[in-house]
Each structure stands twice: as structure tokens, then as C-alpha cells.
Length: 142
Image (cartoon, rainbow, N blue to C red; front, side, top):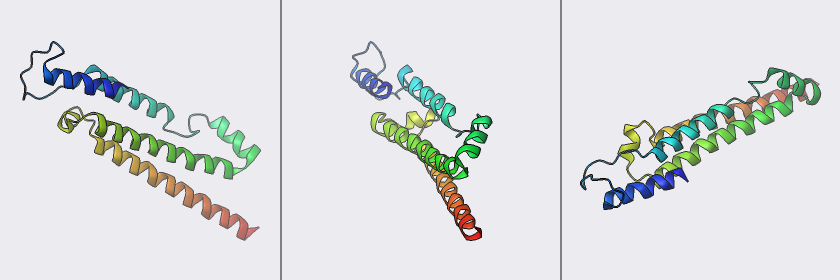
């Protein structure tokens, strides 16, 4: 919603409708809504970036009670979720902020978020492959 508001305010400024006396052709600037959207996303991801790592006692409890497989599966799903968050935010930025140079100036270009999404997708894949190889080792050794 904040990105849509930024887009609307930017259009109004370009048309001279929001009391901004900028001449047409000057570079646009980041609205408070755009900066807030980026800040909210960064806070959101920082809270949920690490799976179970913030609560080692919960991790130990799940390993004892349900076995390692549950924790590994959860971590794979978690990395997938984090990757999806970055991918969707990159798409939102690209769709709702037409001035990509502005995003580059404030350090929030969609390609950065797409790159982060790819990095977390790789973590998800590594987690899955690690889990699969451990499962095969347990089945082969048991």
C-alpha cells in the first residue's frame, strides 16, 4: 500500500498537483511512503530471517521430541519463505516505482532484492539436499 501511495504522490508531483513546485524533467525524490515501505520490509525480514536460531531451547525440544527431520524440513520451508518475501518485494518495487534510478540512489533497486531471493533459494536447496543425504545415510546405516 505504501508503494502505491508513493506512486500516486510521484504522479501528482509530475503533474503539478501536490503543491510541489518542481519543474517537469527534474529528478523525482523518494516519498516518505517509499522510504517507510523499504524500512518496514527490512524490519520484517530481520525479525524472521533466522529459523529457530533465536531460540535454541525450542530447537533442542523439537529435536528431542520430534526428531531431526522435522527441524530440517522446517528450515527448508523457512528459507523458501524468506526467498519468496524478497522476490515479492522486488516485484512490488519494480511494478509500483517506475523510476528505477531513484531506487538505485536510495539503495533499494529491485535487482538487489532479487539477488537476495536467489541467495535464500540456494540456502533452501542446500538445506533440502543436506536433509535428503542425512535421511539416506540413516536408512542405509539402519
